[in-house]
Image (cartoon, rainbow, N blue to C red; front, side, top):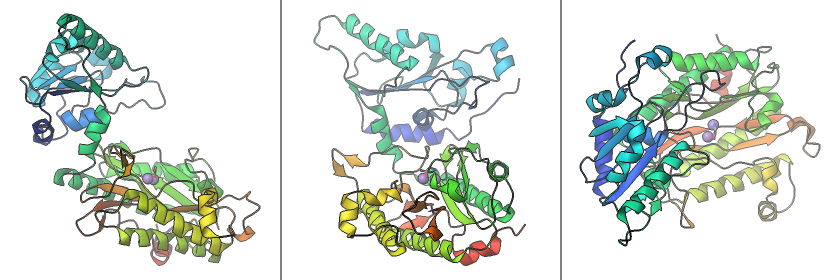
Length: 440
Ligand code: GLY
Ligand code: MN
Ligand code: MN
């Protein structure tokens, strides 16, 4: 049985925890892994809960971290015990000893000790950060701990420990990327972009979406990706008008566009790129008009980015500019303000302009803070992804535009003055696309 080593240098997680600890003495944070998928399931690879990974770098299922800023021991990890027979079937486990040796964790126990030890660990703590999930086994275990703790303290005025939302709490740290995280994210973006370029080079009429799906996945893995950041969308022609198209199994037809929304996960961080291009390598006049319209809007929003803007304003900007485009193309008619207030634009642009990006494709972090729209600040990472989708059965739309679905999505880091676009290696100008498509 081969030993494994942690993916990263543990100082990354140790320093991160120190930073969180400094401002949160007196609290405890409990983060659990999510259940392991069965081996025979369709999504059978386990991925660590992003918060647990963020705090520990530890990748095994059936693990729970108890983190007590400023106390000794400060970090306690519960995990599966070593088990020769189980490891023969399912592979290597670190076990508590391995965790203490390799993960810069103060103390580790087997998972079956969780309740007993944690009751003791929470004594003297004045608030607990924890996120409940429906049907989670960890919830039952934490509930047992909290009840036992309350009972053990008798009627001494402490009562039940108050619970605050760990995901919101940790999300506020995750939203601002450190230099180390940015380096990893740039790699995730580069790998994603290069895989898109390979897909463009290899696309030809009459291929199946599945071939491109496999090709782009292979090109990501070849460059060091761990997995896809989310289910890739490989959508030819009218399929692109289904936002979360999952089938990826149709024939690519000459004369139609191909929308690819795919991102590589690299060292737990993900890219999220969408490109749309003609399957036969040449935009028709109608496709070019719609494409240029969306591209211009995407570039306008990216050029507008600067610290202090409410993220909500970017949504409104996209809605306003895309509604102008819908009016220009004759998709809608009437007064722009009326269209927007009646949400008629949603017929052709039903999603938002983007989302935070990081360990999760729709990454942690608030968009509103107690009803106040949040502003974007340096070292936040997010996507900008306007799109326009005109279904082929939309008899209200001009016939020449039906069946065209376009989205253009890049990954941004905000700097002190504007945007660092981390996904520029994937071309999006018409001339560049036409040069590259089918060139292999
Ligand atoms: N790929 C999912 C998204 O763009 O939000
Ligand atoms: Mn996205
Ligand atoms: Mn996407």
